[in-house]
Every structure is written in structure tokens, then in C-alpha cells.
Image (cartoon, rainbow, N blue to C red; front, side, top):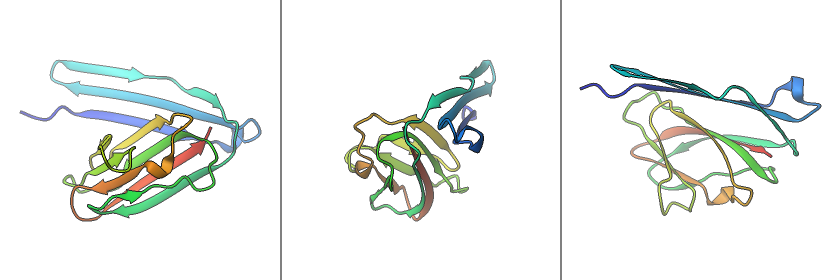
Length: 144
């Protein structure tokens, strides 16, 4: 039996057109088309007022050892975008929000995720590791 195929398209952007108003644009789409399962969900574009103006993007090569993510100069973490950059289907990246005690999110090859962080989130407590070998992982945090 084939695995259910889900395409999850997540977009977050800070557009230069909105630079004067500091808006964040978020759109989430989920589509599933497998046998009798037909799902098509879209959030539409959400515009969110951005009180700050900082963001931090990092691409790290993670291994089976936990590696801390950082937020750079971001004062108050708001939105986060993460993605496993590997094209090897066997490569997974595990993201933990509690210094590696519990795996909170799993990213298969090429999978992205978009999420809003709690106001008190301490990004330095976020760690990533790979299931095997070395896997490139992208993490962006945007000031809220």
C-alpha cells in the first residue's frame, strides 16, 4: 500500500512593499489526494503587524548530536520557518523545544514547517539533530 501523499506548502515573507508598515504575510496550504481521500485546505493570506524589524536565518549541518539553534539579534521571537534541506529520503531532522529531552517535530527530506512561537519562547532551548549522518537544516525566526 502506498503512503498517503500530502503536499504542505508553507510560505512566510517580509516583503519590501510592506517595509514601511512592517507586515508579515503568512499563507498555509494543505492538499491531499489519495484514493478516496481528498483534502484541500488554504488559510488565505494573513497579514500580521510586525512590531520589530529583525530576523535571523541560519543553515546548519546537523548530526546525531544535538545542536542549538539561535535567534541572532531577534529580541522577541514571533514566527519561525524550518526546513530539512536534504533530498535523501532517508534523512530526518528532529527538532526539540526543550534542550533535546523530547523530539517535538520531525522533518523528512525537503519538508518545511511554519509556526508561531510563544512570547516567552527561548530559542536557545531549541536543538536539532539528524537521525543519521549529516543533514542540512534551515531555520528562520522573525521578530514579532
